[in-house]
Length: 175
Image 1 (cartoon, helix red, strand yellow):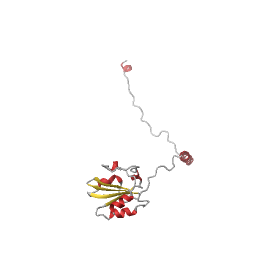
Image 2 (cartoon, rainbow, N blue to C red; image 1 turned 45 degrees about the vertical axis):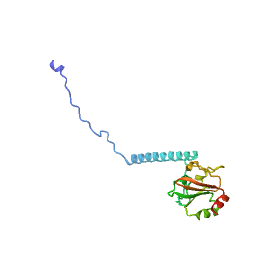
Image 3 (cartoon, rainbow, N blue to C red; image 1 turned 90 degrees about the horizontal axis):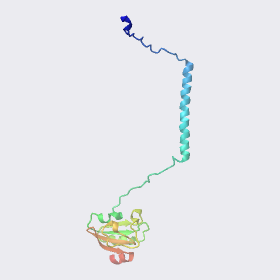
Image 4 (cartoon, helix red, strand yellow; image 1 turned 180 degrees about the vertical axis):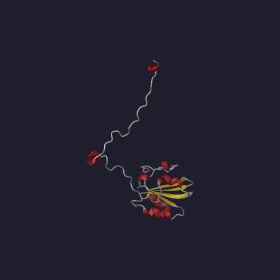
């Protein structure tokens, strides 16, 4: 009776690996190759059709392209924002549309003085913001400048010392 109450644990038989070993035939290898090739071709076809669809929607159209600018450093022409920031203590600044070259003689007249002369080309888009119908001879910094015609400003110690507007007035002053 004592044997009936005992629980006997039996060892399980070891697992056999590769129990269902199947040998591949040439025919099954060709079949699996063709299936794989078909899946790859179908995937590439779907991608190609997707790209064609995106192209038709205009996704790949030319967008923003960075403009190509040739940068030149000029010590004669300056931007209007740097008028009061020159290294010299006393100098002239000519404001004119140098692209049209209507007042070429003014540059020569002012250039005959012993002081350095800088030019601000008002035809450039950076300087065009400061064009105005009225002038401001009492400007304390570059943001307050307003230019309405050909103008010559003499700057002493980072302040406006002379403010001459109009070609006739400039020629009369320097001749």
